Amino acid sequence: MAILIKNIKKLVQVETKPVANRAGEDMKNVNCIDDAFLLTNGDKIAAFGKMADFSEKILSGIKEKIETIDATGRMVYPSFCDSHTHIVYAGSREIEYIDKIKGLSYEEIAKRGGGILNSAKLLHETSEDELFEAARLRLIEMAETGTGAAEIKSGYGLNTEDELKMLRVIRRLKDETPLTIRANFLGAHAVPAEYKGRQSEYVDLIINEMIPMVAAEELADFVDVFCDKGFFTCEETERILMQGIKYGLRPKIHANELDYSGGIQVGVKYNALSVDHLEYTGNEEIAALKDSETMPTILPGAAFFLGMVYAPARKMIDSGLPVALASDYNPGSCPSGNMQLVSSMGCVNYKMTAEEVINATTLNTAYAMGVSDILGSIAVGKIANFFITKPMSTIEFFPYSFGNNKVEQIFLNGEHYKGF
Ligand code: NIG
Ligand code: FE
Image (cartoon, rainbow, N blue to C red; front, top):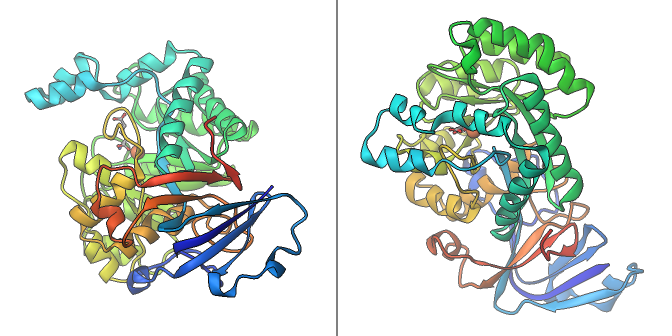
């Protein structure tokens, strides 16, 4: 079908000459059209422009039935791309949250049901169907707050069978939901209990068994490592990334959340599509990222929820780097996939402007999950994933009105979103 949206107060993030991402000063640029129309044909964006330039001629090439929507007073945004999530998990970990508030130590929390290893234990006991159902509901939450694409990681399996189980769930989400999904193999999320004291043997298992099997079933697009203090070393990360690359998986890694771990430099060395978290980013890390193809990705929800220091987003952008903002939706450090809230945090906690936040949550996250050629902006030929806002005064109102849902109507693949 085709959809014609008329009288759009502001059509946000339009591109006539699409770019892969926006960096530095250019992040302040968000092209908008006031008093606009938008036309879709099938699952793609077919045309857009000013209402004053609209004529029936624009519809002449459309064979399908055209539904017309009046968006007076409302804006249209491209859907968010969320380039970093862990939404396939069993149960939840609010016990850990309560314990943290009470001031319990990490060890005490782990004993009482917290930590990645506890999520792994629970996931082991949960069927593929149950995992799919739980993740589907989380994806619905994300879609209903404006997200149209998501990268989803494994990493709560921590043995070959359970990692494959997670990745098969992600494949089902890809096949059975209207969001654009990319899968990331994160076998190196933590060292499983049975390998305690034998970390290098677990790394060998990832390299010799898991990666070849993941690749054989074509279950992942990317390979990830939690490269940080107390988790995986730079040397281990290099070994895993090299094997991933050999099997066609582009790296996207967790880096510098807990320390100046060298993770950012390792990511850049192996041409990672993104390095994510980045709380500990100094001049050396910024220099390493400069002129690389690696997207620095900040996860404001995790830093907020864990009360961590904030990544120096302002300094990174002012140094000419691009920045992406993603949710990190996971049971331990960010039990939310709300990119509207992430947008507000970008402004409040990271001192980014409303325009920079739009680029960081749409085009730059699209780049960070390898889809900026088909998503991340309103451009002719891109997938028609966008939303109509509630009546809104300015683009600044969007992050300003934090915690409130600004999304009124959702379109995915050129279709009215009606749940899935
Ligand atoms: O991205 N940093 C590593 N991993 C997750 C947290 C996972 C968990 O606690 O379950 C993250 O924040
Ligand atoms: Fe993460």
